[in-house]
Image (cartoon, rainbow, N blue to C red):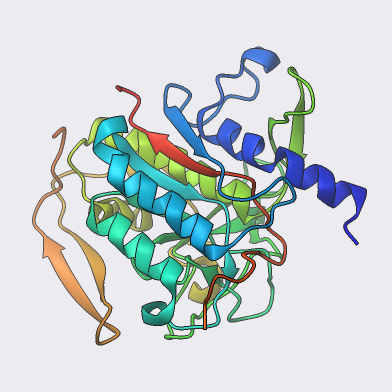
Length: 304
């Protein structure tokens, strides 16, 4: 039986995630402003009011985004959802559809899951090498990085293929954002679902500055700008999201990104000389142990 707290969490989840990405702060007089307040958000309801549904419905929703990305100028898919990864990615329909999204030029950002601190608990599609998988940090509500630790609930790697996941972490404990219970209500929630939109909003700002970046370039720039929290890679990935490093980095520096070879399950390292500046998963119930979502949120370029 779900507790009242969990039911409330389900009701406000999608609204809360949207507010973290693009909330304009109107109801809080600017106190709780989203990361990219000028972004446009397209919300697609894939699951029911109780957070239940099927993998096929989520795949259908993502496929719709791929088909309409040029019409709506969609750049980013935020997936604050997940399902236990019982298969390697080549046998996981959800992993396959997010690969299609990335191949089409969409940046896909997914929650690592809330099944920590056990190892090997990263959820699908966060197990996909090409997805930007986000874990959660407990920042103790202070600006001091020295007291930041990986949230106990944040899912850990490795994946079934042995990949080091998550890719990075962001604050995910007691994050204040919009509630849909009242027009002027804000509520603090915790989870990798809250850390993920912080990364998606940051990517929106990055793509507004560098319009021609590929999904692989975006992922590389994010990971190369992270702050190392001195934890294991399967706990923190590259480290904690840091916008100052991200936007103050030398655009002309070489950088690397990894592309997953889905057939051989190997990594191929590629080097880019410059960043293009200015320029047995079935139709069973789709769920996550601790994260249930009402909508998939798609971040659109703010200039639409």
